[in-house]
Image (cartoon, rainbow, N blue to C red; front, side, top):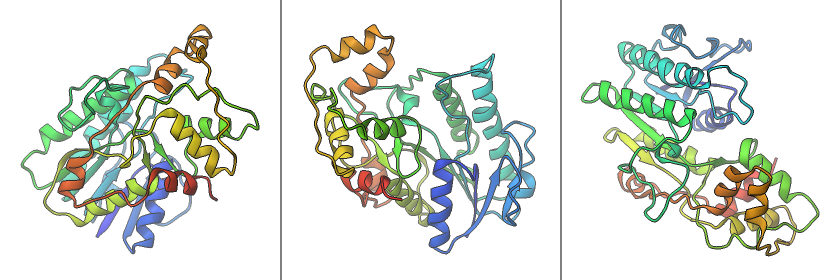
Length: 305
């Protein structure tokens, strides 16, 4: 099997390339810039002008993980257009070229945030309402729609993955911030966030699921994926502290939520205090998959070099 993985230098792609090469798969990659390796194609920024054809020769499976991700300090004058160009328009062009090149399976890394930033009651699953709350999620919604509608009942199977926050060694964003916070030798005010529930996914579980997809020739469509355990913010941070070899040292602060809002951190407060539940039963049923790592195992491995 010859597999093309996009976004070679990204967090997910790096782990995926190493994992599949260790399994003996024939891997071709793309990146923005030339790196001198023989099996990599430097294609520049994601756009409708990207020359995908040369990278697609002889490819059996595409795993499209390259994307313009959510940016905390946005500087682009038109963020929505930037996200749509990179994540929707480019994907549309790429998938069309892949189909024309005879690719048999197109795996697309989307996000659970196409359904919204949090749940209230029922967990998100494959048929949940689409409620993107930012430009990044909107661009993923449009890409999903195009892939599902255009290649339905064709020779190219489309598998769309909707993960929550992915954590693992080298992860950035919220994971990196949490680890940095947990390394501080001080008590932390998270003892009051014990009653919410959130799902995450450890990189090792994501890679294992993709391996199951590669071995399967029957199933396609959307899959909501996550670790088996749902944890409160308190439990997740406690696990990080324990994995770092520290005692949890998390105290109760009844004013913590209001404190965050006062200092303009409402979005962060909502994430820390809110629910984000995911039902991964379809993924487990269709692909006979069970996440091999517990959350604590995943956190512990994420902190090891």
